[in-house]
Image (tube, rainbow, N blue to C red; front, side):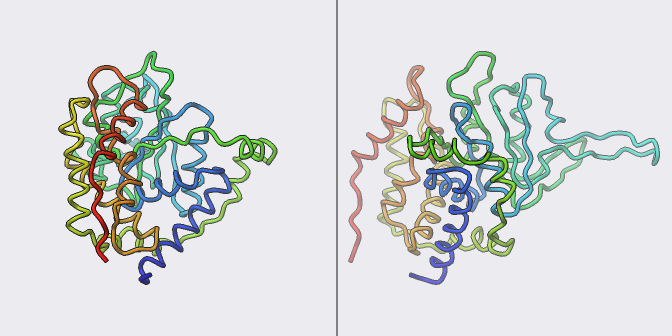
Length: 316
């Protein structure tokens, strides 16, 4: 194992273990969230209420020592409520810009599909360019920066579904799901999650976060494995169950996520299993299916595509 891989495994274990004190039994989801963060992407967390979506990001923010803000999306929320406004300061007789909640490290966009498309789109520049433009000014957002948006997949009345172009901006789509019976019994008997989050310690330094973000691009991806990735991407474009397959942005995200997954598994080279481990959360939300089908149906069709693709053999 290379020194870089050792460092990635060590930091991954520290972060996942610390977050797991709050979010029980979801180590794989925390690891995927961390992969998204390392790659500079954003997460769409779609789940029923009460499964720990807000607590996950709060715990993650405390673990890495980042600032955290939550924005509750409602139909009357305006773009300026997110980005900020220029106001006239009577003391100085000048206009000043009051920064909105988007100016932080980790942003929870809670129930994003309850806001109007105009307000939803105000996140696009921040997510894509990590900057905000308002009243002729362009302001950089702090680093690191990540948006985690949540949606309730059950209740759709009075909501504004995210368009495909905006879904494509999210690096991964995750779902926590319910805990096992034993895990849930342990959670309901312990003290409140709020108290546990407040007690969490910052376990990584800013330099270690920068190290995670800046050193995964050196991970080797063989021509065979890169070809395997493209077989998956093209499979989504040619399957008649989908009207729109994965974008090139999706292909780039799959490549980066596979590199980080390899390092978290202690390797400085990508194998097909790394690609399979991240392919569904990276690609499925980018696919548009024929007819009004559920995400679970899209996921089943996507898995069928992967099963029919020949896996390249590792060269010894």
